[in-house]
Picture 1 (cartoon, each protein chain N blue to C red):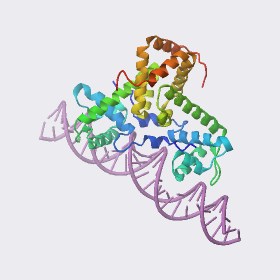
Picture 2 (picture 1 turned 90 degrees about the vertical axis):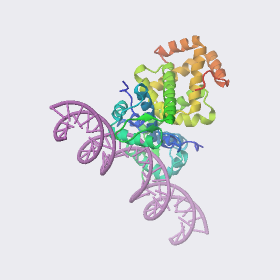
Picture 3 (picture 1 turned 30 degrees about the vertical axis):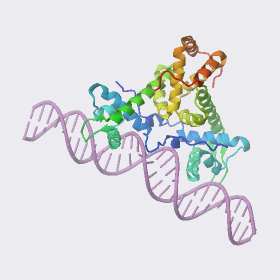
Picture 4 (picture 1 turned 135 degrees about the vertical axis):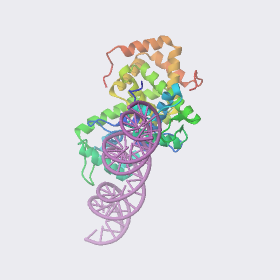
Length: 160
Length: 160
DNA sequence: CAAAATTATTAGCCAATCCTAAAATCAAAA
DNA sequence: TTTTGATTTTAGGATTGGCTAATAATTTTG
């Protein structure tokens, strides 16, 4: 009857070719931080993700093994071509989710956290649907406006 | 600059009072499976979640420690009042996400998996926004119809 | 250039959740 | 009632990604 269900852990176990949620976080952040100067230092990365340096070291070594970044001990972190390409897509995905949540009225205070949690869980197909939904609103600005107004007003039909 | 970011693992670490994603999965499923007879057997639970029995044993023991279920070795699993209440809310949350994703045009094939991944990540506030969005569509059936048509059509504005 | 300060690594630990293999318990049938 | 078969538990292992404490390398400063 319920044979199609899986636990969260099992869904989140990535296939061999793809990245774990944390790997995605690191790569995404490396991508953001390296736009200015072209490289990142380990401690900047650790700071930005609010982890301790040893955690960053470990992950950076993993990403280097996967050839997504270039890194040698005590050195500087730069993105490989593949890493850059993936990282840019991760950032796009992040921005898409963020925009969607904003459209649906999630408060600015919670936007980042909610985005960061959700982004790792959505498939490409789902992401496309989200984009398509926002296209729809772009093409129907009256509806977008009406929706925005509605989401702002406080009273609700159902409470939970 | 990016000091508000966290890694996925850190976001998903629950505060002491709340449940991990996997605990939620188990509790939710126990709730579903026990509606008929009022109880669940361990192997039913393991089957439904596609895990091996030892994994289910361990988790069931944890949930019993938290007084969310009643369980004694080799016995039958029943929900405590608190477990039932939480479980029912988890199912509501599940259904809300599922309905939202369906509205946004996610294919039936992917609906369950996408729902199960996302459900653990959204806050109560976000959930309320989702509900409110669907209220909006209920109250504006013309818009809902137009959106559905739009999501069905294949061509897209942007591709990624 | 040597000492001090900063940055990064290693080593080792923890928690969560899955797994397999083997042992224990329970229930049903001969 | 004893045997068999199904169910469940225990024991032990793997992976992931955090952490701290101690060490090492690098950079800055006096």
